[in-house]
Length: 130
Image (cartoon, rainbow, N blue to C red; front, side, top):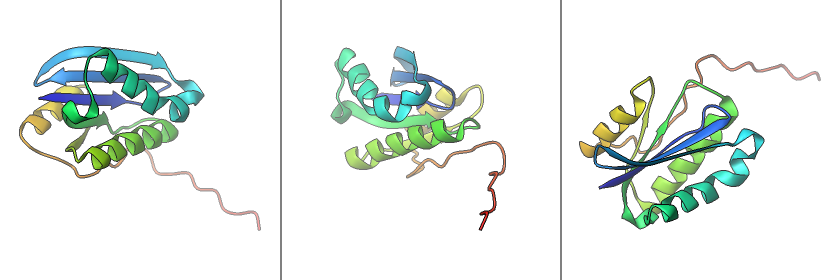
């Protein structure tokens, strides 16, 4: 079974393709402020380069934080949407072994239904001036 994973908590975006526990391919690019515009196209190109389509995936996973509010929000929205549209299990993980943990959970048949971000701090909400 193949699994697609992403990490978008920093300006350097990472993508991974696994077959069971074996890492088949990895790609990364400096997304900076282009993440929302480029992410889905980069995922499609990454899968195509690896002769894989969304229908070939058994699940998707993502790093859920802590990290950049905007990067996590965009990445998790995209991966949750892919999971929903393709009816795939989706798993979020954190920590240094996040990829291994996520793939293990997918292999065990687990799903989070939806990944929620972990930002690492309380939000800083400013009060309206009026």
